[in-house]
Length: 265
Image 1: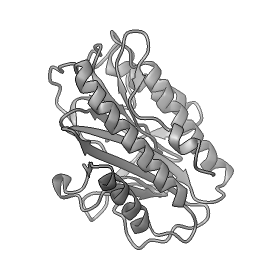
Image 2: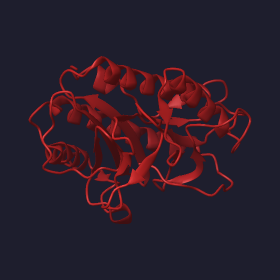
Image 3: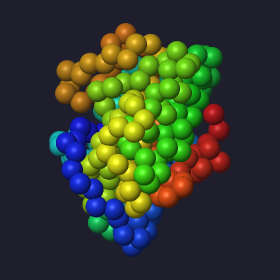
Image 4: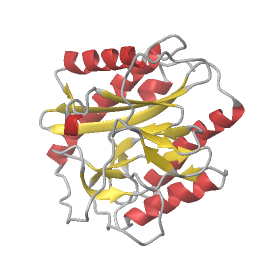
């Protein structure tokens, strides 16, 4: 889940705080894997939400999205041309759909946040490329999340990779800092120039989350006041991980390993 930010000085997290956030990151990652196991044609997005909320609460945490600024569910579930912030509903997933699942937890006073876009059954070649490129653009951004760089270095890495394949970067939405609050400074755009933006320091915890469109980058806010959709109604993909900025190489607090080692797609 993402939000806009004004720049503020950011206090790096202590190693004790990072350890608690790592617990959240692992729980979010495992929750997404549980959801991924049931993504299939014929399943409703409400059922995905039920599985996630049950798993989170069974592990002693609470869904951090539920009730956030009035959001009505544990997950943001965004299908096809919905970029982010879709509501779970009676919508039945169909072969060839893609579904972005964005999950947050609150546990021991800290937050976790991660997102993964799943294919539903077999998808066409362009859609498969969109998923692969979006996920790789995330990893390119993470590679730039090192102490001494700036948020613009992350955005530049994401943007140049995604656009090299003819896809477009959503500019109205961005990643964010995270900690005791779900959304903290700095904002982390998915486009930008090297050497611009907030300076990254050792111990900062941030969520990097490319939102990449198959068509034009333009988006609009749906009538429900939450879902953001592509203006041309072509598909959009969204992947997100939480990381700690370190010297030399960022540290992952959430991971896709539980999904990719346990979910067949």
